[in-house]
Structures are given as C-alpha cells and as structure tokens.
Image (cartoon, rainbow, N blue to C red; front, side, top):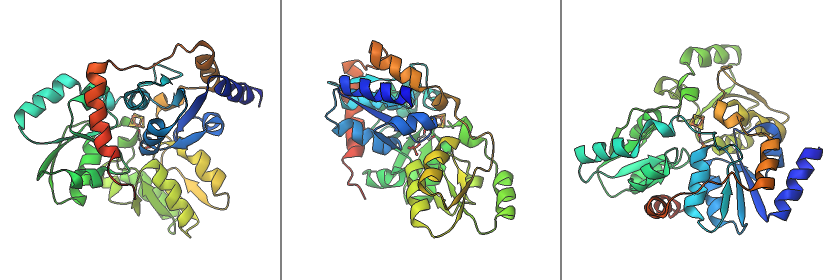
Length: 301
Ligand code: 13P
Ligand code: SF4
C-alpha cells in the first residue's frame, strides 16, 4: 500500500518508532513497529533508542511516553484522541480524596492524566494491577480511576481496596446477558475478558487479562472458539495470527471512538509537520515519572 510505504519512509527519515495500541485501526496496527497493551508500549517507549516516538493510541499513553522519555519527541497523530475514563478524576479531586485518607497509597491505573500520576504513589496497568497492589507496603490502597478494575483487584488481593467511581463507557456497556447469549450458541467457547468490564461480566470469564494477555491466551489454548470481552480493534491481530480459530465479539457496541480516530494519513501528516507533539511540564513530569518507574521496577513475569 502506497500510504503505508510513505509512512515507513518518513519513520526512517525521522529516526522514529511507531507504536500502536491493540485497539487501533487495522492498517495502523499493520504499519506500526510494535503493537501491544499499555504496559508493553510504556516499556518500549522507555527503552527505545529512537529520537521520535509516534504513539498511535490515546492521550494518556503518549503522555506516559513523554514522561518516561523527556529527550524524545513524542507525537500523537490526533491530539484530540483522549480517554474519557482518564478524564474522570482530576488532580484536584484526587488531592481531596488523599486528604480523607492520610497515609493510604494511591495506585493509579495508567489511564490517568500526568497531573494525577504526579500525585499518586505507583501506577498499574490491566496486566499487572493485582501484582502492583500486592507490592505496596500498606494494608489499604486507594485505586483510581476505574471502579471495575478496582473491584476485580479487590477479589485477588488480601489488601483492603478503596476506589474512585470511574469507568470506561466502552467496557462498562457490555452486559452479562450479551455474553450468556453467545455462550448458549457456542457452549465450547472460552470467554476472555478485560478487567474494565463490569463485575457481573468478569464473573462469567474463563480468563481475565489485558489486551496482550488475550493474544497469549488465544495462542496457548487448544480451544478453537473465543468470546472476546474487549474493544473490537483487538480482533485484527487475533484473527490474523490464529486463522484456524474463531473470535466472537459479544456486542456491537465494543468500540472506543477515541481509539479509532488516528488514520494512516494522520500518521503521515504528524511525521511531515512534526507539530503534534505531547509534552509534560517538568514539575509534573518528574513526580509522574517516579510513579511510573515504581511500576516498571516490578520484575516482569
Ligand atoms: P490494556 O492495557 O489492556 O491494553 O488496556 C488499555 C485500555 O485502555 C483498555 O481500555
Ligand atoms: Fe479509555 Fe475505554 Fe477507550 Fe480504553 S477503551 S482508551 S479505557 S475509553
């Protein structure tokens, strides 16, 4: 594809690496150097030697790359691609919650703004949330902003978990009835589900994991049919890498409009103009980096 070749040539010219989240449009995933979940992409952004990172995802993800790599130029090809859940808690709101709970560590899901990370103690992603909570030296933690991820973690840890009442509208829409309807038609199928789904949906899952966890599960499992409880963008590589297996989305509404904003044309323009840059002021970046670094220091499995 001509456009794909143009993008790849521009990436070379700018000494850039292109990262794409698992929910991005098919052609964006196809063109990227690396596709992955939030944890993997933040690790790559921290470790890459590229001068420019083109982040195809939503704003908090590009912001995390800018926090971790202040000497790199981080481009978000659509600066208006936000995560509504990340915007559900502001730094001022978190400050008030902290004052109500002196000494209680704040575990911030990476789906938060840099200013909120700066006020938090440690980050987590959907791939490591329970492990992060277990690593914290306290009996009680305060998790932000996702009530569903928090309730899932609360069941997996011996610690007391309190949380902010945020949610992802895309995942929170999926109902147990929709999942059960597919299970009835495909009784042998395994249901894999993102922890941003509601507890009554998570309860039905055979495997609860991050988006990249779903690729691993699908490849390792001998089962042929999977019900997929997350955003539809994940189907592209699941189907491409597992042509003999069947992947079923239980609802048509599993679409994150923000994740679908970036087109390959946007990526080309961002690389041509180099003006869609995400930056974080130093007074926020430095404490936010400490919060992310504490998560990244936890040994990988
Ligand atoms: P993952 O970290 O599992 O990729 O999830 C990110 C996200 O935004 C899910 O909605
Ligand atoms: Fe945010 Fe939900 Fe979209 Fe993920 S799927 S980026 S949590 S709105």
